[in-house]
Length: 369
Image (cartoon, rainbow, N blue to C red; front, side, top):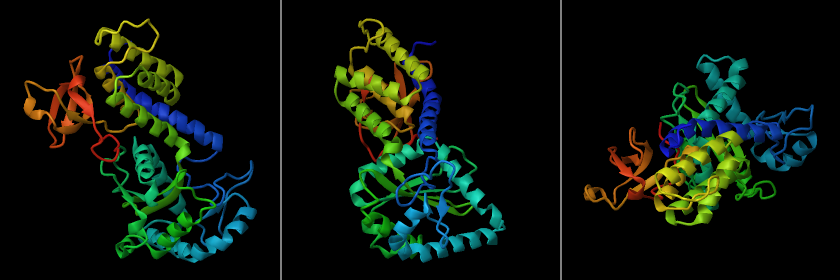
């Protein structure tokens, strides 16, 4: 094992993806369903009883229910948008056939697009945080991509559309149907089944093939880990307290698989000792320092596949760069204590951890490919 936090940061990225995938798989298997929440009961957000299948609305073939009871109970609300949903699906299917697709392949194509979005590193963490930050605005999180040729999703665009726009601005209907807007209104206004502090709505669009997927996702599915990680990283970057470093160690143990977590934590301890002069007993949480805390905070963001925004400070030789903003791209090759930072003009600089501070430049974004 190479005892260097640069190595940890460089290597933890794929491990974190695996860990996140493992946690997601555990959560999905415990619920018996997929990660995006497309095929849960529209009324109660549940899965059908063991041995049963979700049943689609016989009219629109869009909404799903875990039982006949839920379907009947939801009908007074669902009937207001059922016909528009039916027309929207019929138009999408007709468009699919007009592009040369076979009717019987339509659902499989949609599942392929769904799977592609699920695998893009950091995408749902970015969506989760964006929705949480703006939850008071009844947002629709809109995600669009050109095609599935780029697994990293380099061209993906993520936007937050507040209710003040999707409900009131006629330009919304230039992209989406009136039926979809009615569906949003129905969901947000139906307080018996939708809770803004617990759920958010999203729309995924793949332009080629032309497929759009809408869904409702619970923050509790993965968001608690994501938000807690960001909270701890922000605390680490703004203060030098032992409790924040202790929280970070606990977060790694919660978010990663056990063996990966222990490997990363040991690298942090070795880094603290060999580079930052820590003298705490072996196996304990190191004493905090500004540089170590910043490095651990950036590791949390890497574990979430999110950009760690920074502002340069305290530079002497290159004082003209003080105040410049950017984000960490990773450890500087061949250096033990320098990090590569991509500045807002696209240039890269190499600086020590003591020469940058974490700053919230914009809404949290996934790491650019």
